[in-house]
Length: 354
Ligand SMILES: *Cc1c(COP(=O)(O)O)cnc(C)c1O
Image (cartoon, rainbow, N blue to C red; front, side):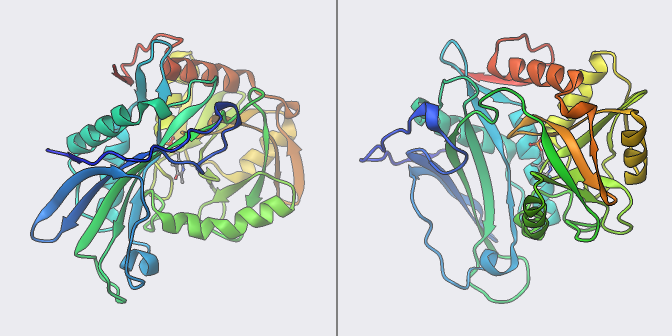
């Protein structure tokens, strides 16, 4: 793929590395790639970061035919650019695309586009401890048409955002609120796809949880409200006395890349890891009896997010005295060690761009 590059004439001022928030500042350049039915993907290009111009009738604005991904570039101590399991993100993007009738994009072309973009904006990768460059590939339906169908035109773009440490003061436990009436998705819905509509469905419950003093929503299955699905935009893990368990992938849970990495790391640490249906009643029971030792969410943004308390079934449960679990900390340390390159990478998860 021959990517046309137009460099910015006005490089932006870079933000203060010690004062970065999440997802508000973007780098100097972006990658763009258009699709037209009959022609395929055309016109791959890197341009100065700019606003998209679109007709108010553009389909994505009305019917949410869109897919996104989220991954990070880490600044290596030697100045290299480090990427974690990046092929998996673009493979997942294509699985999401298939569910939303968005045309397939060649994974190797995505990797090439991302690599060229990162090389161009490499000075934007922050190096302060815990900081990263967040990468947001997105594809949107572009037909100017107020009618429901699969669009005939799409734009795929990649934007980059330097982000601050998720835990500026070290791992911190969060409180979660079990949502037992609103649902995010159902089996057969879009739960397995990384798509904007799932987030639209989640906002209201997030507001309710916040009002009640909890940071995240624990979603139950959409049909019976009986089994654990996910937490916020993270996969959920419970460490019971005799197993580390996480909901199996059965149609409504996202196939998280952090999730599968944690499953592998924990198994290699000697934990018994079980993917299964987890009744919320079992969680309440084991939280009350002391058999729930730790709970945590996993996702690219936080890596591991320990849960200190859980509200559900009319009461609040403290988990592990509200502290950070031993396994949560170990998994966080090992995974971030591999990502930043302070620990060996026996799994071959990292891609290094010199
Ligand atoms: C992105 C996402 C996750 C986490 O996936 P990672 O690949 O680990 O970042 C979990 N749940 C939902 C709903 C998500 O959108």
